[in-house]
Image (cartoon, rainbow, N blue to C red; front, side):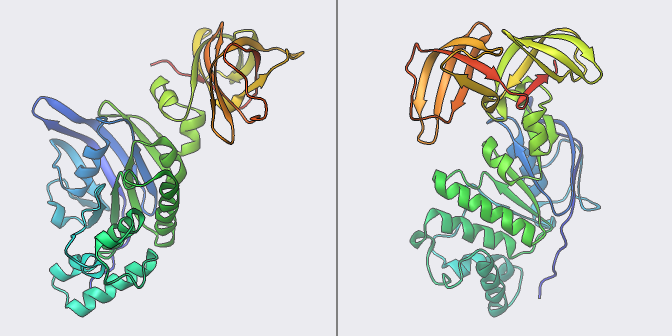
Length: 357
């Protein structure tokens, strides 16, 4: 039988990857703990896929050090690293049956065919495809093909499992189900998983920790809640979730908090070490309460500039003196037309001062 690997940590120490004069990964350092699912998140061209390929050994670092567990793998080839990768395209062999695809790795490693296929069937059962052995990839749905690709990666029982945009070829409803499957497998099998996506909702849903990348560097790293509620800079605030980035005036500090004036409304927020004066605040749509009749308390006056019906809620863009605000309203029975006068109240949750820089 093949050895059973234990989940391992992944560590980058000041890693740089250059392609000629282009720096794709620029002095990146992080540690991924064993048995966690960590997502590399960011827009196209930010360096996240190159970082994943550096872990896999499909690219070699120009500078720095890469460790898997306690082993320095910086100079090792992909074949010498105990990792498996699930590619965006699934990369299944079209002429091979499901069981031949899944057992391919153990077979080429020298295991007898019967033993390799027994391992393959065990992994197919894990991903819910028991009994699909003899089918060809072309006879499967996109979601089933994705599961075959996962089973094929799992059969080698790697220390680290890598996913490169695994849900991008699936429709919206299937994406949610498959991401839940991946998360459940990661937890039940105690796997170390590194997951790449540009979809922030996907990252928030599946991750223990998210590493947000921008321009080949790490913009912020933390738990999904930390990134959403306390973004480190304007890029993260704008990229994670729908944030209204509005100019505000930070006033007198009292301990960790300060009064912050946003239009005609003053709220108390953590000042996050920002000096008094003009600051940027990130206002999440759920922090805005839309009123069609002027409330008795403080509110920001505005007019509906755009309106969209999305079944479960309305989405509005409201023009105010403080700037444009994107608002989600759960009241769909009375949709408001463009030009309607409204007032916006602010809750004490979902608003944060965004540090400069």
